[in-house]
Figure (tube, each protein chain N blue to C red):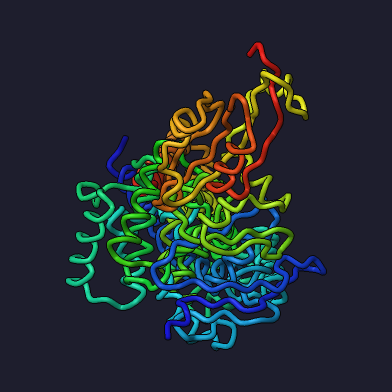
Length: 344
Length: 217
């Protein structure tokens, strides 16, 4: 039985009376990409420091590959840290070493002989798409290139787990996409388990297969990303985090929304569908089967963790009970936001 | 300029260079480890032990507080013990070194303290030991600053070595005092000052070049 690569059980950590981590438990299976999200101060950094064995929780246990991080003596922690790769927000490359020298460092620390080190560096440079940059100094690279070096360095000792601390937060949107693609490819090709700490929901939506939401040091949601996003949670924390990437009713229409239906009015509905339902041509089905016109006001279909997910606000004319049942069958969390009177 | 004066100044320059370079070397050998211990034992350092950091800081400051001319005199018995004499260039290296060690240690400490702690964390996450952090992060990352600090130390030593000349250490300071000042020989005085200016400018230029080369920007 695979009990999971990482098992976090009931860890707590406080700093000077402030409980930064409060009874946190979750497991990560081999090959997963777990996104850990929360607002600043939610305990993300404290959790990451505990996972990376840089800090010990006051209570609770963290098991990685069957070893209890919280029980190991310092001397053995050093060995276990070499099984964990770390990717940092600000790259943390040594300015005194070239790109190749930076990737070489974890190998030198692990005592890999020079010939094998050089072969591994060549391999890693090609994996992250920087084959011609080995001789350059970090100061000569762009942010995205620096992060690629950071990723190559984290992968040097073929770790069992990759911890990413806001790995894309210092990058522009285009570079973020390329770094996320690289991480997703590494996850796919090497089967590497990744834990991504972030405050950006967009990062989670794009690559995290599983999700942990932290708030005030507690886990408030935990499960497959698609399930949590599709379920339409009622938790204010989750809603606040989700709202940044969710479609909104355009202000001009929002101003005209009324609570009750009246003849000729059109219903404004928020519709979320994961899996197979997301690919259905819902709007044209409404037109053909019910003879009503339906338009998308905001949102659309995108991918979450590689699966299609529709999240949109639609406007439907002559909203009948039949239409409601049909849509409700597709999305149990469907919500009628209001009605817009005729002349729209 | 007569051949005699030329030889006099050439020999004095060589003596000054010897005093400055040897005591500069001793300053690095003694001061860098001292600076590393001071940085490591600070609160939040690699091996936190604040009482040790405070004690070393106190000793360093005490040594730096003693005026060099006084240090020269106080150390005469010690110099006799080590070198066998209290006169000459070799003898001057003892007080110069003792003054330079705490001076360079403080400058080195500042450079080492400015190394980004995130880099130290990064190497800790790779499973690096304290010694690996010192060897692969602290010293290489602080190296441009350490070289700049050594440049300042060497120039300060040049000034101090001239002072040591007053008590029979030889070197450019000795020539300036005996020939230039006591015999009112303006030519020699001017020459010595020009040589000292060139000497200091050369040290600064070499220091800047090395430090900039190490910055890899």
